[in-house]
Length: 264
Image (tube, rainbow, N blue to C red):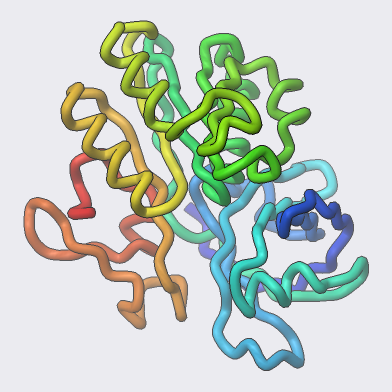
C-alpha cells in the first residue's frame, strides 16, 4: 500500500442536502484512485479556531478528475466549519486512512445498514461493489433516520438499482421503526442467500447490529467513529475495548471491525 499523503485541496462543488446535511466535493487529491470504502480523510482547516483535524468518511471518489466527496451533518465546530466552506476554499487532506471494508464473495448477499450520518461510506461501498461486478439487485440497502429529512440523497440511491429499504422512527418515509427491524426479519426468515452485513451509524445502532449478527451467526463488519486527534495511531485518542481482551485503535486497526470483535 502506498504511504498516506498530506495535500491541500479546493472545494469544487457544494450541495445543501437540507436539515443540516451537506455534500462537499474536493480536489484534486492525488490518492483519490487509491481510496476505498470504509476509509477516511483527516481534514485540517487553515486560519481557523478549530485546532485539531477532523475525520470524515469518504462518500465517493472520481478517478478521472481526482475528486473526493464527503457527506456530513452539522453537529459541532468541525462540521460547521466544513459546511461554511465556499467554492474555491482550501483545506488540507491527510489520507486515505484506516482499514476499508472487506469484499464479500460472489455467493454472499451484501446487506448494508446505514443510520443517519453513517450513510456516506455505505453509499460509497454500494457503488464500489457494483463497479466490481456485483448485481445491484442483490445489494440490500437499509437506511434509517429519525424522520424523512434524515434520509438524504435517496434519488442517487435509487439510481444505483439496489434494493433500497428506508426506515424512519416516525414513519414519515419508508417503514416505521428502527432500521434493525427489517434486518432481523430478513435474517429470521432467511430472505437472502449467505448474508454479509456492513453497517455504519450511531453507536447504539452499531451495538444492536453487532448483537443481531452474533445472534444469527451472520458475518459482517461495522465502521466505527471515535475522536481522532492524530488519525494515524500515535495519540491513542480513539481506543476501543475488544471482546477478546486488549484494545484497538479505530484509526489504525479500524474503522472497520468484524462483528463480535469490539466490546460495544
